[in-house]
Length: 468
Image (tube, rainbow, N blue to C red; front, top):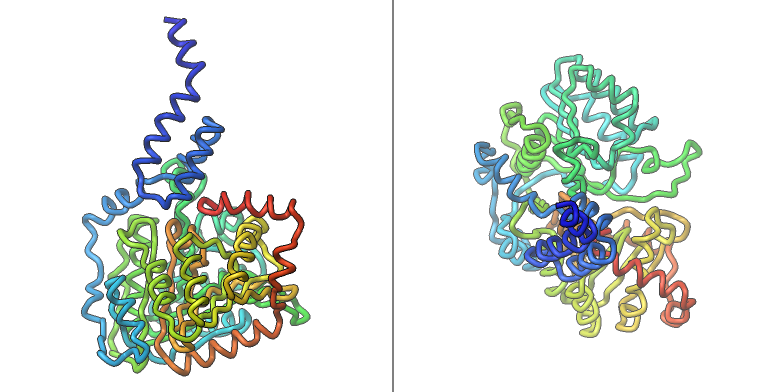
């Protein structure tokens, strides 16, 4: 018996590798992601197995289905307002076909290009709240901005306003150990954490991060986009900023679907159904069409990816992509090269100074191929550009939390808004021109002739791209 035990122990690594190889091959992950995981579990059986269990858990959709099985969601369909002429470009109809998400009407759709402006407006809306406040962020910092909003939420809860704060367990990890977080938990505000990384039941799901940014006040106004809660978005005390992002706000019927999305996330994180808190005594309607496009590993389809891929392929004149992290899959790469070859002007704007060096290096490994095919690439000068924007033909604008990478498209819980408004597109164009004015256009020769050692490093990071 001892001999058999010794033999099994000696070959435990191989046994684990074989089992996980079969599990990985039976899954539906994108090919490059499967390859990365296969290499990890074959070359490093024990470490690879631990990382796969922690970050490659394929069972999330089943767990979500089980949790939602007895949950009656809001009847959101009754709030949808469809107009056959909502989209003069025809892209909206294409998005509806591939996602099944119809357009909705909103009013007061506004671009918020500055963190300071966003925080001022959000704070004013919170101060005016009389019924409820629901807020969801990936990163909630324990800095002066985070403490300000925490204290504001505590005060509103003490006034009798129903307050619900949902933060991601990994993105807001350090905040959960702060004094202000303990004060929030002890207050009348309701606070919960999405997939706490130290929880016994949630540690295997920590890779599925809630990257959404949602704030809804009294059902009358919604804020969403790419900005988290942290001082870096509003700049230093002298007014200088090194971090740039984009957000938007709107009112009207579409706000109700944002509440529904928050309610589902809250249910999944806490097990509590809070749909009864949402009240809408007045119908606001709206005059502007948009589509609320959520995505996540629990959904059967990758809505945000399908939206971007479809609209890129239907572009007629121009495409502008603003993203902090560019780690596209091969279909998106081929699409960008092909539409550029067809004469469509393609511009990609990325940060010259990146907060994620490995993701940045992975993205730069694509530069040479894109530039060779006529795609223009710009890097901002000395600032971290965190905005996530795609503009097609100067009219269709998609903006939100999703980056141009596999994690956002297939692993994270994300939220983008597709807007159909000439005024909104014009405001977005002004913001993009500001980014371009503060960027350097990359030269193909310079990129091609970069040092060989850098190319090797970028290639290694690119291999890890699907699981970053």
